[in-house]
Every structure is written in structure tokens, then in C-alpha cells.
Image (cartoon, rainbow, N blue to C red; front, side, top):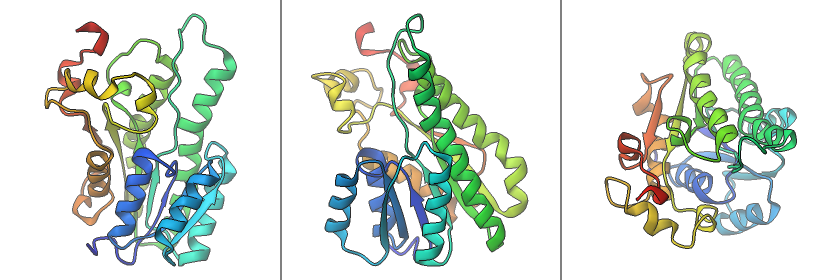
Length: 254
């Protein structure tokens, strides 16, 4: 359980769901953490639960470029260094392509892409200065791999994050920084429960392994990619979907 002892990590979008499980798993395995979410109440609950000198919460909008720089400054101020970034903050936005508005489009791009881009930029500058490498993890999605109705803008951003990980290999590898992404499939979270009255049942029937993912399933994959065990893996997207992308049915197609 000391896999991340002495490491400092930033996790955005960590108030609930996948981000929360990644953050708590890193903390449980010894990491010092800067935990970010836009919802102050969720961060307060996390700080009250853990009451740890290895955990700092920052309520801020992860879509803003300046937030990424602030989070990195907070990590260095609180813990002296930065080793891991998990750029997890993002939104899912459903809507018909023919009716989708510029404001809806901009909000998805700002959080899913702009926020991840500039947090990664800020973190990598710090890692380069430190001189001993680091780990970057982006949160893509299976919807960045397979087409889905009503999710064009969201799918574009998630595909772009996977390409960001591939493209940055050229610039970051000389600095011993790895960058990868995870692509979760159907995962049971507070948000996805609101998508359908029987989200778990509908998706469990069409996922080849017979169940939706838990947030722990996703967190376990994430922690592998930011650990020393993944030291020679970079530019990759790890799909965590119970085999769904191999067959790709949707609930309403059954």
C-alpha cells in the first residue's frame, strides 16, 4: 500500500465518481494530493472524511487555464514537488448535432480539452524543472472510439484527448514524463444513474463481461498507468469497458 509514498498528485474532477475513487486510491497508497472540484461541498466532505496532512482541496473551475497553474503551484507549495497529474475533470453533453448551440459546444471544449491541456502544460513545466520525470493521465472515453448518437461534441473532445496523449510522447519522453489516457466504458456513478432509471441493468445486459464498471475498476487501471509499473508505457489509451467496444451495442438497440 506504499506504491505512491513520497509522490505528489493532482486529481481534477475529484468530488464524486471516477475522480473521487482515483484520488482516494492514490491517497490510500501513500500519495500526497491536491484534489480539485468545482463543488465546494464535495471537497469539504472529502477533507472531513480523511483529515490528512497529505491532502489539500482546491475548489476551482478546471476549465480555466489559470486553474491548472494554480493547482500546480498549490502542489509545490504544500508538498514541495509534483509527480502525477490526473486530468479527470470533464462533462458529458447530450444533444442533436443539428440543434447543438455554440455555447454548449464551447462549454464542452473548455472543460474537456482546454482544462486538460493547460493543466498538463503547467504540470509538465514543473516536472521538467524538477528533472526526474513524471506521469500524466488524461480521461478519454469509449465514446471517443465508437460513434454514439447525441454525443458528437463530447466524442470529439474524448478522441482529442487520446490523440493528445499520443502526440505529446514526442515532446515529453526526453524529460522522462509518460502520458497516457484511460477510456472508461459504462460506469456506475452518481451522474450515470441519472441517465436512466435502470442504467446498471440496461448496460449490464450488453457489456460482454456482464456488468457495468465500478469506479474502482476504472481507478485500478488509472493507478497502474501512473505507477512505476507502467514506466515504459506512454502514448497509449487503456480501454476499461468489459469488452464493450469490441461489439458496441447500445441499450436501445437490443
